[in-house]
Length: 144
Image 1 (spheres, rainbow, N blue to C red):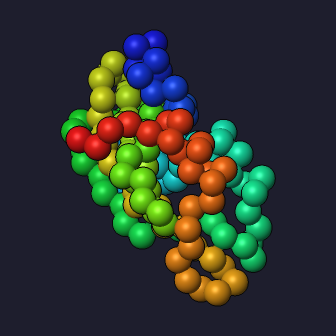
Image 2 (image 1 turned 135 degrees about the vertical axis):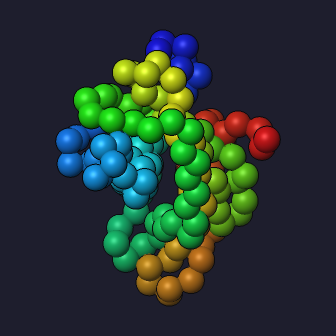
């Protein structure tokens, strides 16, 4: 576990809730998007993004999500979601998620979200600000 957390300095622990499971007795596929959202918001909080944006300013929106299920997860469990950044462009970047199950001691799920900066006043894409670019670059990994 420590090796996983060392590999993903920005990570979020999530407790699997009974309600996350479906009739087949494993975490429902759509719940992983919520887990990704929790990890994404935690990451953005840790790099202080929300200190610099307002609802009428420039902020991140998701234009695409992808999930790859490797192993089913069941209650009870705690998951650690590691986040990395790749593919930084002038107005977008990719957030990559790796989900580690404490109960299974294994990676169960991977995924990514394309994050686009958006100007909520004009309704148009916007450029990544310099402070955000600097924070993202700090946590960026080379594209695979």
